[in-house]
Length: 119
Image 1: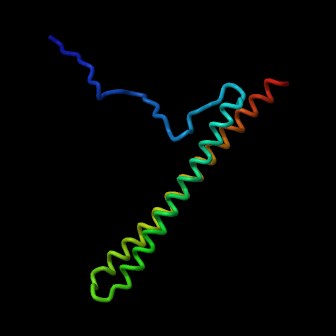
Image 2 (image 1 turned 90 degrees about the horizontal axis):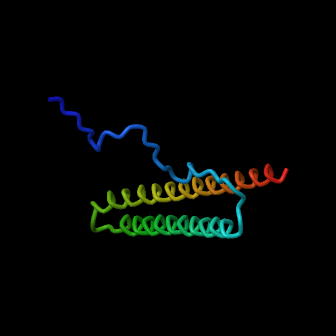
Image 3 (image 1 turned 135 degrees about the vertical axis):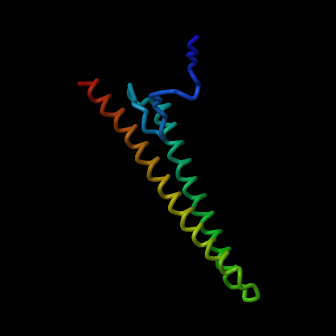
């Protein structure tokens, strides 16, 4: 007797939804969509500011740890905090620019489709 079972783990050709790159607008951007894009843009700016704030707090903590003279081992912790501060800042700027480019592309593609439909 031949056993043929399909394992749920063996799924082929799955196209994963990536960070805003798979969306193709099929109609023009109406007011509701424009307001949603504006809300997303403002949320993106708030997220960037929170990354910057976290980065600055880590930097301030690192400076405070570095100035402690009684504890020599805290200098390594301060160096680690400085590294994480830079990493947080880079990640925040990268995510901000990635989403900003994605929003611009979606908005401009929908405007191009609207111009093509008008002609």
